Image 1 (cartoon, rainbow, N blue to C red):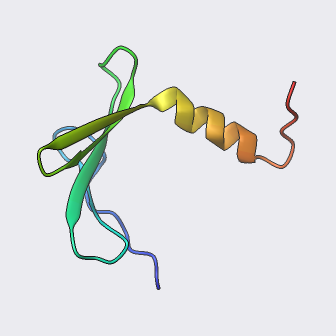
Image 2: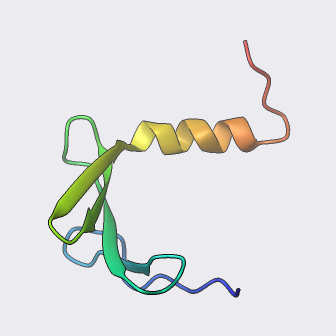
Length: 70
């Protein structure tokens, strides 16, 4: 299955518009740096889930080939 481009800028005013893997449902996601702590907000229907943005930075660092755990 080919990857699809997300629509939107990833802000609260212009969120990313995404589709579930089977393509049957749509949901939105955006970065919100104004929250404490800053979060990636995902909204599907009436459900809102927040993930700390720091987790994404940590994951990116761990996936780098030069990562060494302490």
